[in-house]
Image (cartoon, rainbow, N blue to C red; front, side, top):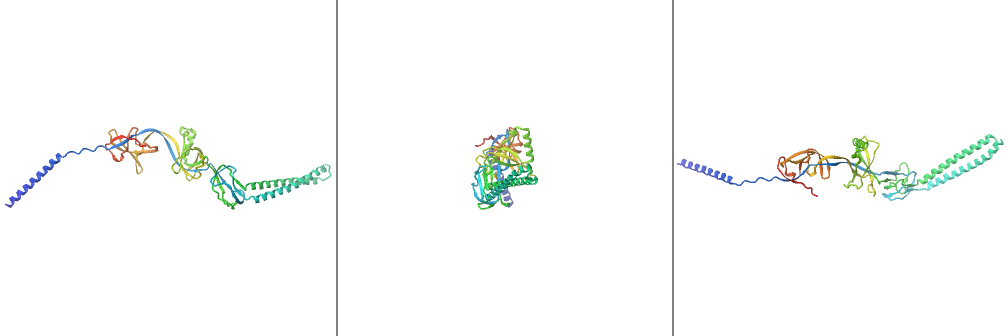
Length: 381
């Protein structure tokens, strides 16, 4: 009897399970279908083909067009500084004064010595004038005549030497007034009033630099130098259009264009570079020697360059890639080789063809093989 009841319970449980499964299947078949997700919308731009200028930037330093090192040419004590440090001075302006009294005394002594030798010469010439007629009449000996001639010649030599000493003393006295040899900006003074200057241990008193135009030195490689020489020889269009921009340390661009000045006489054997001077107008003397800057040079014009907006290029560990949208709006990730940046674009050297579409906005939404809904990209102002 007990076995009969157990069998009945098992059959009832089995029926309940079957009924539940059928009910679940029915509910599953009756559930509504979820619609497929719409393709993500992305902004795309065409790969354009355009001639673009090719620039190159160099680290540069400024220097004066002329730099005059002001030294004391005579030894003495500094008694005056007659210019304002950092100001513009003209050629011939008085910069410093050295105590002139010792040099004035030396000049007075030199003049006295000259006067004495001139008096001796005058006496010797008078004696010779008296002896010559007597010698012609044989009233005096030949020896007396020769001695008189010798005394005149010796006195003339003494006068010449004394005059030279006077000129030297005049120069030394003039050197006590130290003037500027050029127009330019006068630097800070390295000597103070009362210092003994003009000694072998003395340093330069100051430096005067002409800074309009200002000279900007750029180191270039031997290869670049040889290429520039070749352009100069052939007078190519790229050479005639060469321009130079000066970019200051704060990022501002100097308003005046530079022109090629000259190349240095030798290549630095340690760096393998040669210095090239670019001349920039500096009408307000705002630029000063010793500043660091960058010079941007227009090297050539690349014709038919392929360009895409910079935002379309993704960089990952030194490699670059773009998302290309093909004809059926499928995304293909492609590695590219980039060139120079130009305005808001990037020149693509390898990996793209003219007319292809690349994703500019919404790159984070796409992956290889995904369908997208492209819309034209418009650059925001």
